Image (cartoon, rainbow, N blue to C red; front, side, top):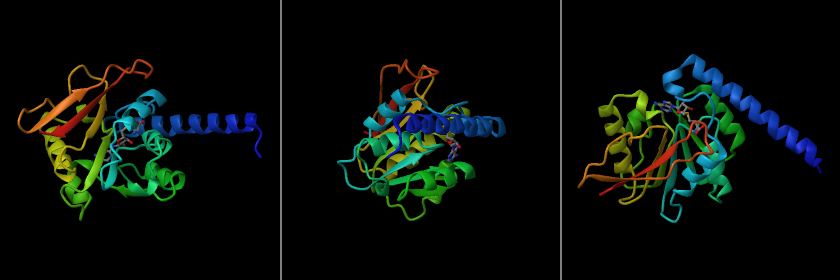
Length: 200
Ligand SMILES: C[S@@+](CC[C@H](N)C(=O)[O-])C[C@H]1O[C@@H](n2cnc3c(N)ncnc32)[C@H](O)[C@@H]1O
């Protein structure tokens, strides 16, 4: 059995390595990475708590990065075999495959969602959890991504998104989709909020 101090030291060095990977990705492509370090545990846990695994179908994660939200989903008891991770960055995809056996990792562009997830049927997903830096894209592209995502979801199922902004990444459109917001997660740096969209 590993000594608790050794376990803690290993976790700490893995966290530092993830911070470094993330920072390098931000330096190489700030608009795509969208943050200088991974989301903290409080935000990751809140994101994961909004998923609805009681619904049928897979749970899709957009922009999993180093896998902090993926881990929160698995820690919540959701089997990695039920998760699909769609990530743009090659190094993050390799890391996710190594870190989460059974996880389906798809490398590609989330903004071409239906094309990237070729074969995924409308209404087939239980939840979508997105950490994409939506505000780096024009409003029309964000809206188009959300509409594609809502089509893939079972009617009423959540599209979960975090942001650091005061306003929602896509404003609600009564009759088409609703949005609910969480309180600020002050334990995250920077503080963030979680937005949950559903088809009206
Ligand atoms: C703000 S980071 C979030 C990472 C992680 N989920 C977290 O909360 O720390 C955004 C992630 O989205 C990925 N990403 C950005 N644009 C993307 C796109 N168009 N398609 C797929 N992934 C994308 C980035 O590579 C990065 O891993």
